[in-house]
Structure formats: C-alpha cells, structure tokens
Image 1: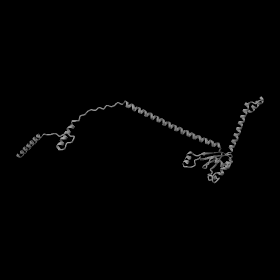
Image 2: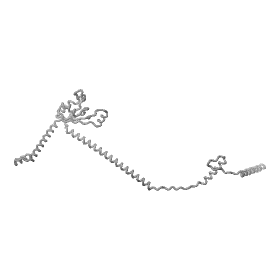
Image 3: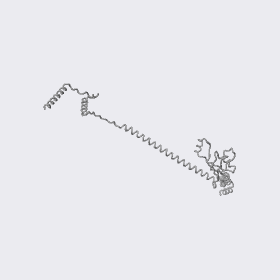
Image 4: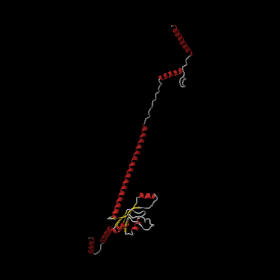
Length: 276
C-alpha cells in the first residue's frame, strides 16, 4: 500500500519526492531481509547435528573440521572445554599443557549427511596416517534427531546464566560473611576500649584503704608457763637453751639450814618409833 501511494503521488506530481525514494528503499531492504531469513530457516530445517560424547586428546575444532569435512559440508562446530581443575591437575602431573575438550557438536548442511556420518563412523577407528596421533582413537558420534543448533545455543546460554547466578550468590554470601566478621571485630574493639576506660576511671577513683595496727601485749599465762618449764629443766639437770633466761641463783646458807632441819626431823622420828 505504501508503494502504491508513493507511485500515485509521483504520477500526480510529475516529479519524484526524495523522501518517497527513501521509503521505497527501506521497504525493499525489509523484503530482502525477510526473504533471506526465510531461506536461512529453510536451510536450518534441512541441517543435521551430530553429538560427540568424547573428543580425542589434543584434537581442536580445526582438526575436527578437517577430518569430518571429507564426509560432507560442515556449517558449525562447538567443543566444550574441559574442567579447569582437571586441566590444572594434568599440568601439575607434567602432561599436555594445551586446551583439551570433553564433548562437542557438529552441524552438517544436510540431515542425510549427518545421519550417514554418524552411522558410518560411530565405534570405528579414526584412521588416517599412521604417524598421526589420532590414528588409533575411536569415534563416539551420534546423530541427534529433531535437534537444532538454536537448541544448543539456548542450552549453553541457560547453563551460563545458571553458573553466573550461582557465582553471584556465592559472592553475595561471601560479602555478607565478611561484613558480619568486620562488624563483630568493630564491636569487640569498641568493647575493649570501653573496658580499658572503665578500668582507668576505677583506678583513679579508688581510695586507698587505711590499715590500722594495734600494739598487743603478750598474755601473762604464757610467761608463767615458761618460768615453770624453766624450773623443771633446771631440776632435771638439762642445759638451758641459748635463748632461755639464766637459772635462779640460790645461796648456800639457806640450803644448809634446810638440810640440817630435815636431818633432825628424821632422827627424832626414828627415835620415837624405836621407843615405841
């Protein structure tokens, strides 16, 4: 309709409008794009995809295309890189330091070619030159019925989105743990500072306690017991201790008098007994 209106305007006006020419060109471009997309979708519907459950060691997409292109025309190839942890272990063990692949997909221009390649090569030896490193490897290839390349891209995008989501969750969890730890560290430092200030304040306000000392005399009973103990030691003939006080000095005259009186008493008593 737009083209007819533009043509009518040009016929009625007799001169071409530059804006109308631009509109016509845009419409032509849109129609070309639509036709190209329709052709591509038709071609994509005719294409077939093969799945490789195992990629031979040291094989890259270029080498795989070189080997499989002799059986039919190939559109696209995608190989999944191996796990980085496995690659690191292999490098540490002194193995191959290049990039290895775990699985892959190959898109052929025709379904019939893809089916024929899968039936012919699955479980067979790769072959080629005997000096080739892939000569004794075996193909593990399968044709994927009703599988399109768009399904693969969607699956890869979905896996990448899940991986990014998991990574974001792990990063957020790590950030929360870090913030919690830092908050606890700040709280502990604040509490320790408060305790130190309180201790200093308590020491400054603390009043020294006055300790009163009262002089005390020794009890009299202890002195009397000590004196009696000393007299017993003297009568027993023990040597006085170095710290003990000197013994009492008794004069000789009273002692002689006592002895004489005792002797007279004993004599008189004996005489009385004998007279009886």
